[in-house]
Length: 202
Image (tube, rainbow, N blue to C red; front, side, top):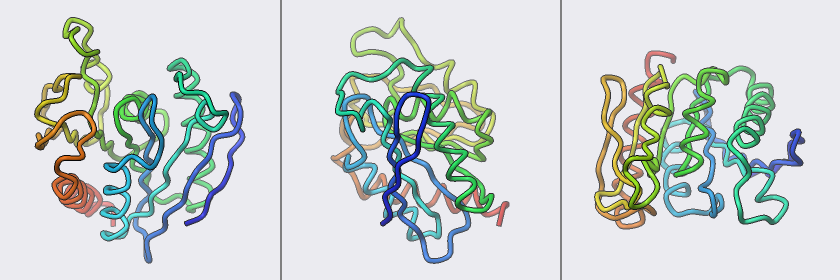
């Protein structure tokens, strides 16, 4: 594992590079609003992706690097993410990029997928709405993604469950928003999907 700092307009971001032996693509994963890159589902997906030949970059947003718990505004999160994506593209010589993340990080991945030229998006526990407020749907962020999407969602997630779409796959697993109840299921679903969506690009 290699850790690097990348300067953004909002302070340094931190990236952990977990390389596969012969990587065919790069999966960038962002953390949740109040959590970090050591979340169990992010760790599980990192290992699963490496096993199927995908490099993984765990991205820590500048507000977390600076020691703040409260997330930055969406515009800052998105801009910082895209700055990191540019650096990662240069480091990995133009390999296809898959964007992803858990919760808030999944939202960032969806909002930036087009501008960042991601070939696919992996969402762990996409927060469809704030707990108890189904009227405040974020479905439009998912619907705006025009490349293949996989959403892994806990069956008892208080943040709701997104609607599947023709190119959006939804896999419902045991557990809640942290997805810890079925990490094996998380790993298996992520690995199978990555192999399938990246095969045409090989």
